[in-house]
Length: 328
Image 1 (cartoon, rainbow, N blue to C red):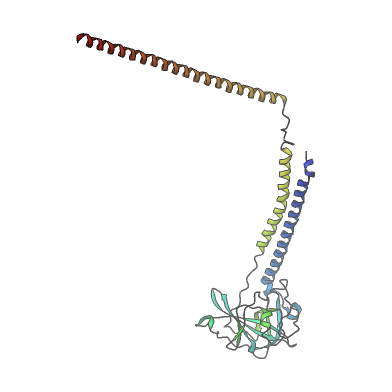
Image 2 (cartoon, rainbow, N blue to C red):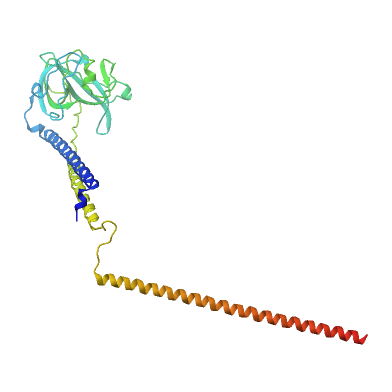
């Protein structure tokens, strides 16, 4: 019954079904990995206040050359709570404009923190509002503490799509915190991620507004994973449904055998229908012939009557002419 599955057409369909299912399973697994990564990030965000900070050098690989950024640590390290000590370098402070906090647009201020080994990590000290002149003017920023500073915060990955960098009022000005691009403007090696400040000793200036940390939408990835796995199963269901439909259809153009009694009933019904149609055709033909005969008789009677009237008219005319001749 299902021997047709061994034909080239059905073997090809089976191969495509398997390939499609494997691809969908892989896509579902990838979405599951993204769900796990984002869930881990959210866990680090939520647990930051309750876990001990690790040294920055344990979480990030040290940069090696001045004017370059260290390796990107990847999402597995994002938002890890770290601590680091050093001295701020206000001469190379950075202002990232067009930053929104609580529906207000302002600046994020990043100051390089020089470590004892000469490398630097950018510390995002917080957000300040834009001046009355807007983004075209530099904001008023509290000065960075002098002397040795200990910073505690969470690792923030470098932003993609680097933007131009220029000097404005003694600071580097940019729209994007892209560490590979900013490192080219700095005279020391820079770590491949920056630190979002949460605590500082000595204490940070209260003029700064803490940068909110958004949670990742991990459940979206989880939903996508389930969808891909369902699709992977549905292609097999579709293949089976098509195969069953093919098996139930006539083979080689012949209809499936029917019971003899049912077949005879169908033949008798067809014969009866043909007889009815033939009789109806004969009746219509006879009726049409009868109508034609009646019409022919009517036309003949009308012709005779016309001839009779014409003959009478001619006789009457002849009598009048004769009468007229006798009188004269």
